Image (cartoon, rainbow, N blue to C red):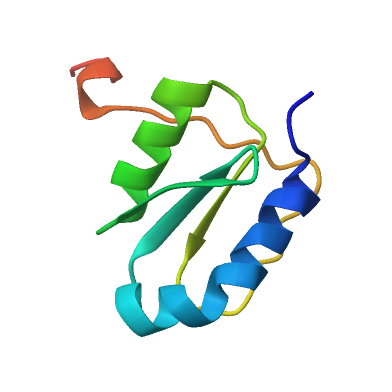
Amino acid sequence: MLATLEENVAVYEEMRTELEANHMHQWVVIYDTQLVGTFSDFEEAADVAVTRFGPGPYHIKKIGEPPLQIAPSFRFVLTHANDRPSG
């Protein structure tokens, strides 16, 4: 069984000091209680998470930033410039 989002957030909290010391202002992806990696921007982090793990749950966070509150009805959908209709 995959870890819940809450479990992934707890892993971030356990690693916060080390992440802030070595990767401040980068983006982190945690999936199934494992650090997947740190990334220079959100788009790269999200692309890796969605490509490797589908809809999740995974935790994507900008290291050093306070928690972001998103409405429960919000759903993240990754789009690429190449997927948009031209016109």
